[in-house]
Figure (cartoon, rainbow, N blue to C red):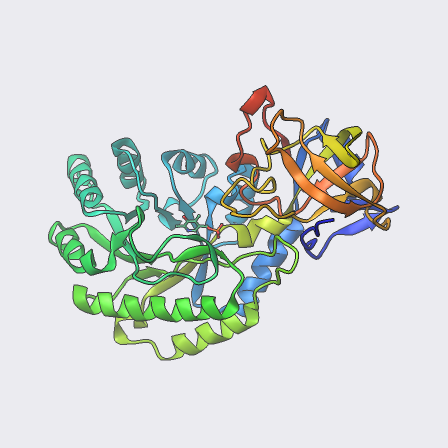
Length: 408
Ligand SMILES: *Cc1c(COP(=O)(O)O)cnc(C)c1O
């Protein structure tokens, strides 16, 4: 038997069945027309932002990193809840434009931006988080050609990283950002060219559940920003402090202490140096905003035994839930929070593995989990499915196609 991850708070049962927004899993699938189905909850999205607003100093803006979940309705819904958006491709820019977002509230990071993407962002007034000196030169040239002064921030590759972070994106050699030692020279070039300097972007990592590490990193980010501003010789108009707030996916994971992070940040902001005194501050979060607000529902198609092991074969799989299958940035496969939605309040009775319908041994949604007895027609719920699910999985693999998605 292998433990499953903790089910996020806020889920209810109706007649013993998992319910979201007052509807049972079966009703949701019936309404959507078929499983597999991603269900996202507006109530949970709102609740999460409200928690953040209550904990963080009011001066700190909250940006949503669209790549975590680019579903159009979610992006539109978030536009009333967050202060800005981070995009990472021309495709996400097109989405932001179609969704009617305020493009002045967008920043565009990403290590490989094509000229067409840079030009579209410059024309739209989006802030580019510049990832290299050569990208800066391309942006300046494209700005010149269009007769526009591009809005440019510099993405810093800091010498430190966020401890305990699931994906390291700072510290040492990286394809992301400009090494911190190079920042003053690149900034000088930017300023000399007459571009609009929009400050710095310092992203240090993702998916950290270590509250102390997040606090220390935020303090290091502010100190580095001050130092670099001094070297550049300008107060910073804006500082994107990165994010990295993680959510509990696995057995033994505990949530971060948001109140402690907010308190520590408030203390820091109480005595900021002149270089940051009037700086617009933001954090950028993806999974922390949307991850727990989503559930993936998939129906059991077959129940079989093999050499004494029980398999529940579902109509879903890694083509929608690559992360839950353990194939998206994890070293050791562990079980996500998984439940039999149709027997949500029943006691576990047996050990079973939940697998997908793909012909590969990688396609596993739960390995030897202790679950209520489920049979053909039962519905399996995979929690923490709101981020890096539908669009971070190979939906076309084996001709399966995408899952349905609804925002309640
Ligand atoms: C991916 C990414 C994020 C979002 O990360 P989460 O772990 O989902 O919060 C934020 N900023 C940048 C620059 C990213 O690349």
